[in-house]
View 1 (cartoon, rainbow, N blue to C red):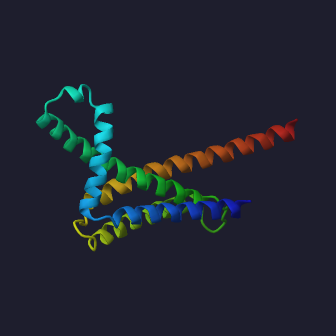
View 2 (cartoon, rainbow, N blue to C red):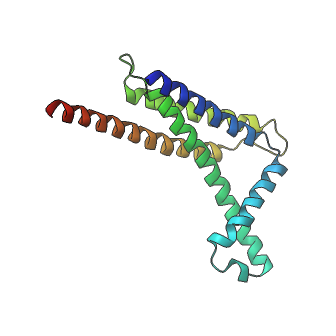
View 3 (cartoon, one colour):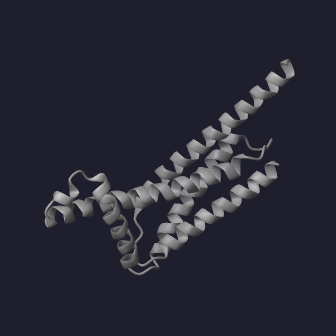
Length: 169
């Protein structure tokens, strides 16, 4: 059963990597258009009295919000990658490598993918390599990885408690 979980999480990890690659393959102009469209939808929802602001204030607000949304998107994508990588790397039991080491390896994998993602953007029109984005991606990968690691440990603890309860009952 563990091999099935590993295969599923490996496929999910690969799918997230493909999504990130596809997003990074968008030209700078296309990426900005997508961000602007999302910001247009989000701004009236999260900014109090947004419709009452005058045009210059709305534009300034949109620019500030767009920067925050882009940062959030980076972190969220890599949180998903970090979570999937941890579940993929940590699901099978291994006597050779303890789970914390495999969790660290999953995090390192996600960070290296973040660096390769930024490097990929050097070859896409209007895009650039930014260390700030690598840092944001690493924080996202760490958050997603820790959440998945915690859930995995919790699930195993619950399973072990059930075994104990069955053995006692």
